[in-house]
Length: 255
Ligand SMILES: O=C(O)C(=O)[C@@H](O)CO
Ligand SMILES: [Mg+2]
Image (cartoon, rainbow, N blue to C red; front, top):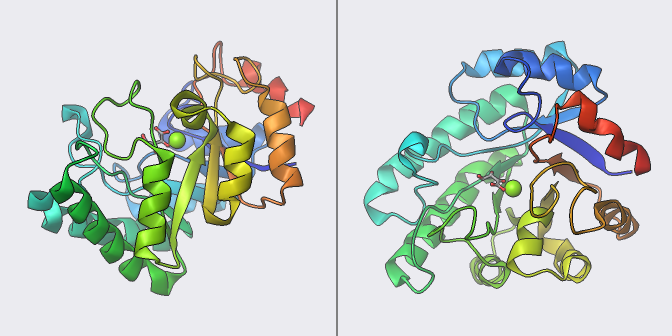
């Protein structure tokens, strides 16, 4: 049985953000993830976890101006200082929450833009160097171009090339099954061959990004195979419930 983490940015929208922790615990989750904690004091995020005996599986570095469409700063050479400040901020929240995985969103950029790639590599080196002493892994996640047009990290080969090229012990892959199916398919082989690089998995149905098992893939079988491969990390439930969070949780019983 995979260790499921409720994604509080997508699930439990029936509750205000800080109340989603209790709701997730009462619904049987032992871990949570979300996009960003930065609208709340770090101490409040730590307390929400402790009060509900929950583990923080993952969150993202500050992405720049999300409301204005920014999706990370790492590929932007002119934003290097801001990116580095974001690393310090994320590590402060990591200390308060105990999280051991931080996702660095790449930002936009063409895949053949050498300056963007160099800035991204520099940003990842910096983040890994800063996070390493706290035992924190830095993750990169291929995201499909339909959901995020123009996003730089949009391909699994690109992620593997970067991880291999940089050779940083705490630089890992965030394998989102939803994105994998859209970008490339071949999900089971991807999980098997990339397993040594994978530090976090996420799941949602394709194409609706709703409850696992409600789309074109047999998500239950995929999660069973992931278990059989020996994956012991978290699986983030990064989906939008089709008709209410609690009403849609029955898929977990098939695992
Ligand atoms: O979109 C996803 O998939 C994620 O995992 C987010 O962290 C990035 O938007
Ligand atoms: Mg994801």
